[in-house]
Length: 199
Image (cartoon, rainbow, N blue to C red; front, side):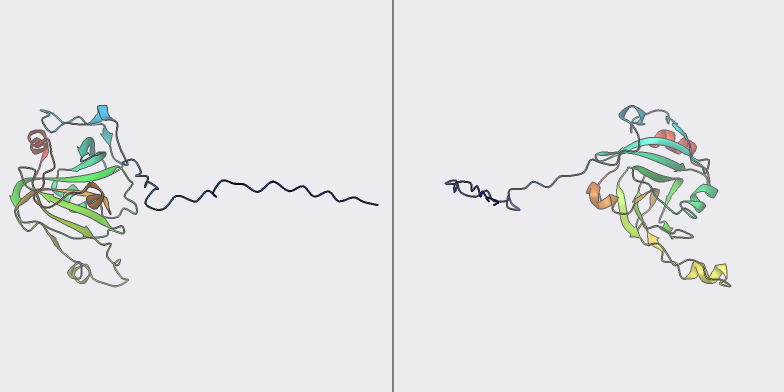
């Protein structure tokens, strides 16, 4: 004969615990995607650029702080590097950026030539003021047999709207995350950057 012993716990007199309401739970904000350390930043008042290394494309990389984030920034300072930009790249890693450094102020129009990832761009004048911002969408690739003229004709142009000297390209979504606005400023080390700018 098998005896079955059932043990029951006494009923609790405490009210049942409830899950925290959405109002009680606090959203966890992820840390900024820093690309460089604090000691690798070239400050906006610097007399010289602090080159950290060269990119696979052979471009200088410096550290710049934008808002709460430190970026490893490739400098496109020559006509050839500015024309190439992010073309041909398949990724835009967090914590990285590309700064197009021009020697003059004109209304600029950028396109997504051979760019396969979405890119945020902020156009900046010589005083560091943002003249325009865009989320540039990856364009459909060039089709077999499509002429270069036909391909480039269908690419959308993104305008600086006012004369701009710089363009800062960031991974998609960064401009919103940073809370940047047209008319706001991005501190840049203008003097040493302009010393590098080539026509």
